[in-house]
Image (cartoon, helix red, strand yellow):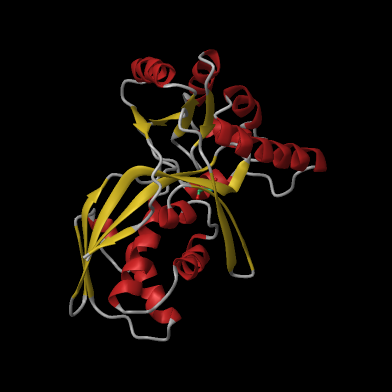
Length: 290
Ligand code: HSE
């Protein structure tokens, strides 16, 4: 079987570890019964049992108390860049668990797959959009994941500004403080609430105000040389910017196609070795093709 799974962005400024949006940017991975584990189509370092798609494949069988069968996993096409904040690990985890569910007839619902995958990833913000598509808010408590979808106004245009360097999620989480003040907590939750309305209405003034964050971006921006220029150019053009997930990618959100086109040209010129890529939301999530 062939699994196609979208990459995603999480956080969108204040919605740390909660908000996520799937992109029309896909990994295509085939799974075929075999007498042992064989992994092809990826770098040598990803061909062992630590491969995330295999680990979640195995976890799904183990969840049901079943032995893990041999499998040939072939990475046919992987468009989601690795370690750039575009949800590549969540996409692989979702793909492996969904493939196991289908191949093994395990009978798990998408919600159960989300809960299983969240135990591996630690937070559901990228997994929910990869599995369900769309713009989601998700949280996890006692192993149960609650996820809901929110509307996105069709006028909004998204650019991924993808640096030519990776940023490890462990490093980008390691720089965050363990505690926040009540003032900062109120700052975050009020902006997250306003942000959902701004996305639904395509209200750029509200979006620019609401996409502020005190929880993670101030600590992560120094890890992304060039990020301040990206944020400043977005600001000058009436757009909004945030770090995609843990970075290194940044997202620029514009209110119209001409505004996005202008920013794409400007940012690509400013960062010739980076990739400035228009992204469209995916609304379907993971699909399994026979
Ligand atoms: N929400 C996560 C973070 C995404 O910002 O650290 C990376 O897994």
